Amino acid sequence: MDGAKVTLGRTAGLFAGAAVLRLALFTLFPGLPDLLTGRVEISTPVTSFKRLQEGLFLYNHNVSPYDGGVYHQAPLFLPLFSLLPSYATLPIFTYLLYIAVDLLSASALIKIADSGEAGSSVHFTSPRREKRWSGFIVAAVFLFNPFTIATCIGRSTSVFTTAAILHAIAKAVAGRPLSAMVAIAFATYLSMYPILLLPPLIILCYDRCNTLKPIPSRYNFAVSRVGIVALVLLVLFYMSFLLTGSLEFLPSTYGVQLTLSDLTPNIGLWWYFFIEMFDSFRSFFLAVFWLHLSCYVGGLSIRIRRQPLVVLTLLLGLFAIFKPYPSISDASLFLAMVPLYRHVFPLMRYTFVIAAVIMYTTFLGPAFYHLWIYAGSGNANFFYAITLVWGLGLSLLVCDLTFAVLRDEWEVERPEMVGKDIRQI
Image (cartoon, rainbow, N blue to C red; front, side, top):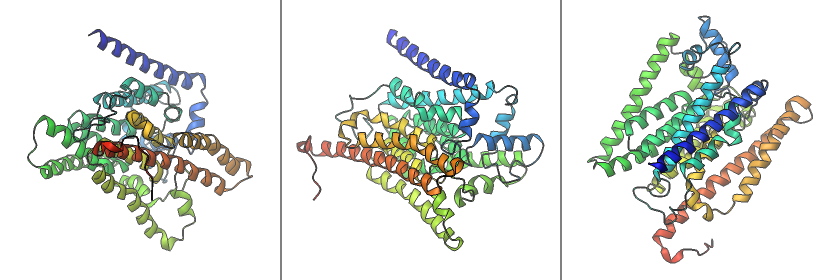
């Protein structure tokens, strides 16, 4: 009992410290939120708080929020933010909402870490599983990650998607498939791409539920989970239809992501490529890019079937690189999951290079964007080049983590190879 009280007290202190830090940045530096909101590294056309304010203004004046082609976010954000006092007069309530969402995400991370799923799943137990960090440390890494803090201060709506994804995973490792499916459906409604997490999430739910009570049919279990997600999405779409009075929100939110109709620069790989693309080839390469993004799901789910949480983590890393409108929020979500695999850190080979590349691009990215947009002494190639290096850094981390996890599995299957180097012939 005393240990539980100490743990609860440490967690409360961590949450209080994170909340105070964010609130201090909001209040002591009143120009900082608007400065960060305008940064392309934080805000994208589908997560921007400025665009949300535009949509909210139209909504409050009984005009379709999608008129003008500026607002590309989920309709249900509008009644949520309209319940809050005006941001122009009382911004503190908006600040508190974003802080609360960050703390909810950290709470889900604690549950995922303390479950031990990363080191000991139903079908695989790592011999290094004892070398793990507690949920307190994992949550602290997330809450005090500069990318997480910048996303919160910049008021990007991606924080809601992050919270929904983490809660879906937390419910899955707890053996509560219904709650997990509802959470991933909400994440899909907000950002679309989380639907690609559904296969490994269903596998994780099945493994956890099957240990509690044998499930006679995998097929029926999977179909029923897909049905739950579809039903929740239909309910959310119907509520959105009642709210807006039309289905205009579908092409304005999900259609924009599918067709990349807004080519605002971001830290992703799509925008520059499609700026240079001839219109006659656009549809073909859109299909290629989306196929490339989605093809990892099946391969990883099959190859690392015994560790579905690893699959979810790697997919989050791939989405942070290859989705149409990525931001540092996606990177912060991936980096929040990586500490779960503390036990395989000794097997990773390029940690220094990865850290150096990510830090290098974090500082040079804004500088190159300034040279292009404001100083006029550079061009789009400056900024796109640094985004390529950013993508390289995250790609190295995804590959290195994949190698470490597979090496861990391999050493369990072949104990005589423990500690020996692998030579590629």
